[in-house]
Amino acid sequence: MPGLRFEGYVIVSGDGMLADARNVMPDELKFEGDKRFFSAALDRAALIVHGRNSHEDQPNSPRRKRIILTHRVAATAPDPSNANALLWNPAGATFEEACERAGVTSGTVAIIGGPDVFDMFMDRYDTFWLSIAPKVRLPGGEPCFPGVGEKTPQQILAAHGLKPGEAQMLDPQDGVSVTPWRRS
Ligand SMILES: NC(=O)c1ccc[n+]([C@@H]2O[C@H](COP(=O)([O-])OP(=O)(O)OC[C@H]3O[C@@H](n4cnc5c(N)ncnc54)[C@H](OP(=O)(O)O)[C@@H]3O)[C@@H](O)[C@H]2O)c1
Figure 1 (cartoon, rainbow, N blue to C red):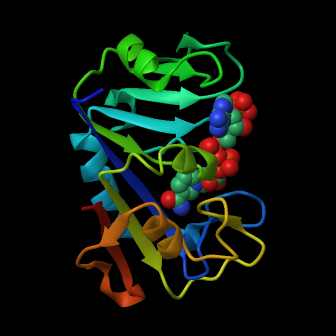
Figure 2: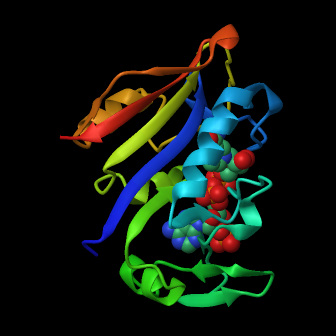
């Protein structure tokens, strides 16, 4: 779909994890500056895409149009609990079909996780915004992308043709920054 632009967003610990060993995003990975950055980006997006466990849970969330991946439907179906959400099983419908059913054919698509969902769009990102909390370690946690552990998140983004731009400091006290990885 030529009118769509793809952007990814994640915050990871210094060891590349997006959640702890219980598969929960812990408070130690939540920072005010990063939350503001993420929330402003999602407010600008035409569509948010995420797996069933990765709802961003912010004050503006109910207003945002979203596609939620799940095996609970065969192809696509309205979300009975959210008029702004479409449930999507990629085994039964293409992403383009899901977008049409969601009524989105142009604008920015924000991909917000989890790992398998990030991976599915790895060759389509125009920009992937990688936030890092360097002082946080989450041993036994959930790697942000499949393959993180043997490789760093940066190596995986680079292997998919993305190159780092200038980092922006989001939370100076904790050294949390975000780097845009762009397709050149
Ligand atoms: N630090 C961050 O920036 C960040 C970002 C995102 C998520 N997180 C955290 O990571 C954790 C969630 O991770 P998660 O591994 O559970 O990921 P998730 O992708 O949110 O949820 C996994 C579920 O999504 C559905 N799904 C994913 N891929 C699918 C596919 N190809 N086809 C059909 N359904 C698919 C399945 O739902 P069904 O079981 O319904 O089939 C699957 O069980 C949470 O703690 C979340 O807060 C953190």
